[in-house]
Amino acid sequence: MSAQLSRLQAFLAGAGELEVVTPAPAIRPDYFSRFAKLMGATVVATHVATATAAAPVQAPGGAAAAPTASVPAAAHDHATTQASIRSVKDIAARYLSHGRTPLKPVITMMNPDDDHEVGPTATAMPGDICEVAGVRADYGKAEPRLAVMAGTPEQRAQVLVHESMHCRLGPALLRYVARDTSVAEFAVTFSESSADAMTILTVARKDGVPAALSALDHWYKVRGDEAASPDSDGLHDSRETLSRIRELLTKTPEKVDSDGAAFALAITEGLAGASRTYANALPADRKDVREAYIASPEFKAQMAGFHQAVEEMARGYLEGPYDMGALKVSLNNEVVEPNSPVASGTWQLLARKLGAQPFTAAGLRGQVEAITASFIASAAGAAPAKLASAGLPAAQASTAMAIGRLRSHLSAIYVDPVPVGAGMLDDVDQRANPETERAAF
Image (spheres, one colour):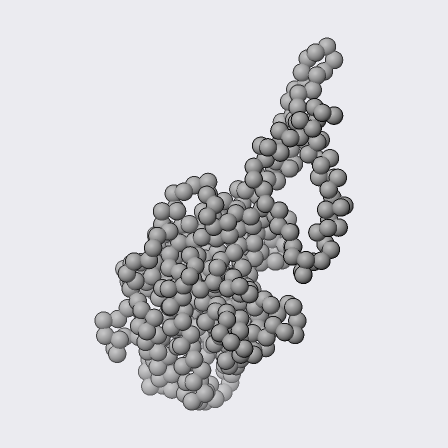
């Protein structure tokens, strides 16, 4: 027995540092204690059996038995978990380490075999946290429509860029919707279009324009198939925006000359595309009603609130308290904090202090105001139907410069607004149901 305990001690010493996350008593008062009582002996027995299997066994006559070629289950799970976490950390260091964000990013991963229909979701939570949950290192076993969105390592990186954009835009959009819930559909349409735009523009920055155009073809098909689905919510159709991004990358790729420019373009191009998508979704059989609504004081007031939200988004990117590339990642009760080292430090050098940015908060607001004015004019027939190309204009007067998840329904996103202060979720009613402590976007 003493020999077995010695081998167990040696095995645990070499297992690395593990962190067990214990649910707060207020959340699950007795779950963890019951689990510990039921599983404690089993865990110890498993470690003993593993250590025993790993030790040389003397066969009759003194000959050592051939070592087993299989990896112990516990060691395999730990290695797989660590590799999955490292893959997310590396994606964050390469693709997300630019600008700032108003919410602290947290990634909660899933095993490939778990909950096949659950996709990545960005959720604003109390404590200024943005949790991106449902992330997998392998989507091969997921529901088909979800699997096709992230079937390759490159696409899995794109999914994280998409969700991270929701974390950057979410607080401003939540406050915008809380002030006027009638703008919810427009807000989600913009958020999804902008997140898709940011995905493609980020690929262009990090991997080149050809890779970005290939990614764009993939996402255009995904969004088209989704729009044709009977259960489509109609809010994730970003094809108008993706078409604008294609034109930008093929005709004026020099506009994407910095990460900050990519962010600003994702806002402006996302707005231009989402505005057209939103207008097309209004009653098609009453063109006069649609045009009258877009030209109405009500719509102008709604867009004025949106312009204010854009200025807040810009301040979040320029001055936010958190670094999107510094993620807390968890999987299978193993947690890697933002300051923990990753296997490859190659891309950590990209996480640096912000230098000069190609836009200001007030300037970006001015650009979206120009886009809105052009859109309203075009709806009334006073300007060409196609909005002017968004960009960083020399003369703004002449040139118009997530709340969501990959697949979602509006009823699952918003809760009743109630202004109670200035905190991140102060405009969201958290009193009626504990579930409303989260605002998924």
